[in-house]
Image 1: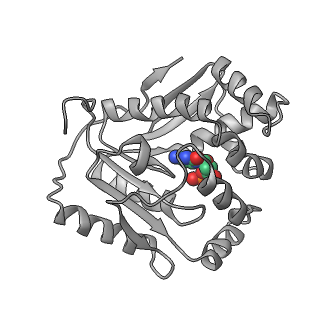
Image 2 (image 1 turned 180 degrees about the horizontal axis):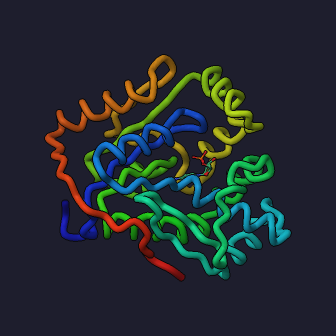
Length: 234
Ligand code: DC
């Protein structure tokens, strides 16, 4: 790692489109390795929920940015998983609401929103080894990590997965906005290992990632991580 790169702990980046299975894979991998699991999509969803609660139009980029920059929120850990509290409230139960699904790509395309959240993501990796999932983790947030994975699946399979979860989620529309935005679009990092999860189980994808990590001389050590600790706050 070059001297200009902050002293991050180990980072396993897992990117991919909506409903590719990356959340389940990332969580399971983190549990196996005893790493912290960071769901960056949940952070964008939490701020989107807040934007909607405040009656701000998610299409209005300036208003969204101003609100987010004025919002007090904390990013911490609960049971080795990332958690975000907005003005002291845990919005977890709202993150999969249809209105959040419909607006999260609009909010997350705003560069000032991304700047705020990327700082929090990096703060996690200053303190713990992390498995972090998202859209730009390998390409933008941690471009220097040697452990980058991109989980994909066919559109038909991804749609079926969302339907099976009982969710209304226009994944094609989200993928389009997430891939075409100017700041940190969804992309396959040049050095990412791509895994197609279309016909693989979660365990099979995790095994494939572990195989690839071993091939890159990745070593695993048991570690102790606090169960509920603040990483950074504003
Ligand atoms: O992973 P997810 O589907 O819960 O993510 C929700 C949205 O958040 C996704 O449509 C785009 C945005 N997102 C992002 O822009 N960058 C990330 N690193 C993670 C998510």
